[in-house]
Image (cartoon, rainbow, N blue to C red; front, side, top):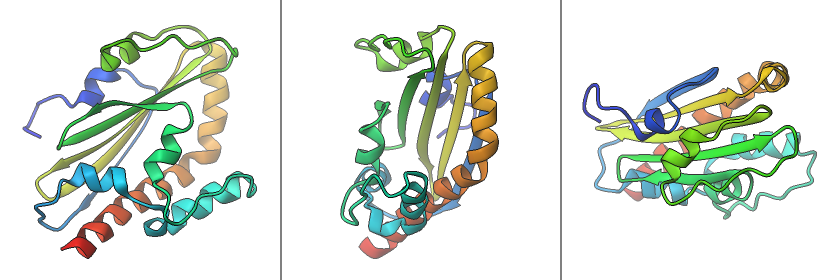
Length: 180
């Protein structure tokens, strides 16, 4: 991405309360890196898979040949944007158990405009610039109660979240090397 060019993640979620960024050098490749991110299977990210199985107390299966992104998209997340240089997924959880409005035809604008106390918005991107693959996570809890509840949750999961993101990046790099 060109210097000072806003990412779609920045357009979808310009404000956030919690954020983490990780990056990794990848080998030069003719492969579409975002295709590799989307097609990555659990066998390339055993640490990520193990953490999720532990957290879920073994109640959810993550087959080795299953796609990581498919599992994420089976929850509250949806693809907001996809190009050869960036993939953005966003999710919204309501702590008040209210229905979350549809994002509309322009998912990025729809996601950005979602507001309301008790909502927690999260967006994750993967972007590639030359030989650097990065991922950024942004979270915005809306309302006092949501901020307090998410702050406690973030204190517990922050380290594991970083391990998961770095594992995902290493899995993509391993897949690119294997395909070279």
